[in-house]
Amino acid sequence: MALLDRALVRVLPAVPRPVVKKLSQRYIAGPDLADACRAVAGLNLDGKMATIEEITTRDEASALLAEYEDVFETIEREGLDSNVSVKLTGLGLNLDRDFCLENVATLVRDAAKRGNFVRIDMEDSSTTSDTLEIYRRLRAQGLDNVGVVLQAYMKRTLMDIASLAPLRPNVRVCKGIYVEPPDVAYQEFETVQINFVEAVEGLLEAGAYVAVATHDDWVIAEVLTLLEERGLAPEEYEFQMLLGVRPELGDELVREGHRLRIYVPFGRQWYEYSLRRLQENPKIAGYIALDTLKRLRR
Image (cartoon, rainbow, N blue to C red; front, side):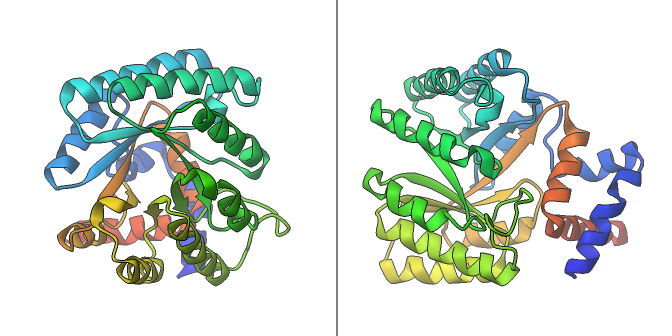
């Protein structure tokens, strides 16, 4: 199956844009914030929380800050159960770290006034140390409505968990989607799975709030065992998935009483986002292909 997934990804650039757009409609809310709000409202009705993620380019830092503030205002006005995910490169990380810190601190403070939360996304390994440093500096400013992301395939992740432990952080754990060299990231699928579960276990032992972001059945089963062993209540953790990917699995988690948050991307860069997301995570291409075939047979 993994070979088929990678084969699907390789042919994507040759697929006509209208076809990619048709396939992506279930996985991207649409080009505008209003599209994301409609998607979030539907998810809320199904008992699911959401995170709104805007698809942008990297050279829009100042404009992007204003757009995120508009997102928070809209979430509050519409009464949606959603927070926001931001990429620090979009807020100026590659320009100047202090400039980026000022931007994200402004955003986190605005979210705090509205009783909301900001998740700082993790990007490629060149930004990991700076991203974690900005997170620490935000927490040192007394900002607690902010969380960060750690990637299970990174060899440094367990050490990062140990260093963050005194903060009792709010951490989203995901597999990791960027192409990284073997000296930085684990390459074997099973090794990444094991490291994922060990990362969740380390965070739980540190008293962290853990957001488990995966569509992997084995990882979910192992994490559920950890949660049961610790007797954690549903409000002490959450699962996370991408919009349109394995919705039946998400529905099952909700029926079992677990909190589930769906990442809802929107924006006009839908084509570039679709290709990048599928190229970075070929397994999702397999999920989408199977789902599309099922819908065509109906």
